[in-house]
Image (cartoon, rainbow, N blue to C red; front, side, top):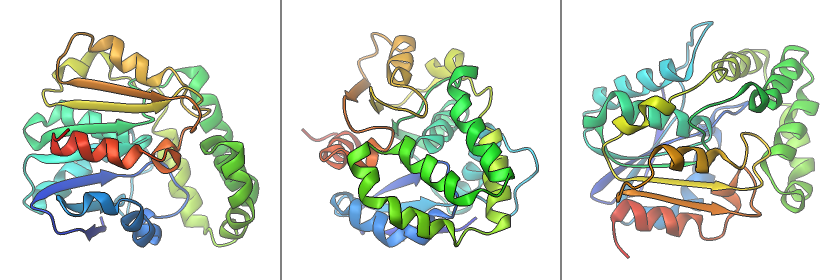
Length: 255
């Protein structure tokens, strides 16, 4: 399992990315630039998935592998942020290893993936298995981003599709299948640290109700926060102009 590291702050922040066709480390420099606000307070670790993945790889398995990597690096009581699939992993990790997580933030991540919500992901699996890479990339981008944003990156995504390998498509399918039947609603109360949920009501991938679903399970907890955007789509962690400031305020505990 590879990772990138940036920032020089005294606290540790671990970032877990969502489902993608290619390694997030290919965009590590862009991620570091986008999240530069965090680098004064935190040393940030951006984790990839393990290189050799099993044929069946549910969210819990990815989370456990990530936990092994954190322990191997000597990390304890980290601030943990996950987006989409990474958010599901982050919640699973905080549930099963509460001693590892000091603060938890997730974006565009549900506590349960229903059959209805899995339909878009099932479509991506079908396209990946058929090696329809450009169609997959474009449908992926169309679902993640608001139309105005997608239209500006459409051509770039079509070009990226040409670089995807068969091995990457295989890994994508395995991870995507692992999302099916994800459900940690009954275990959310095991998360003991301060917890921030951010989402968007117009999320076309996992549903605009994902954040509210988590909130309904944690109603009344003084250390739980939620913020739902209205117009930034599933990838609000990239598109919302104040997302990084919200994340920084929560992770540092400063107003």
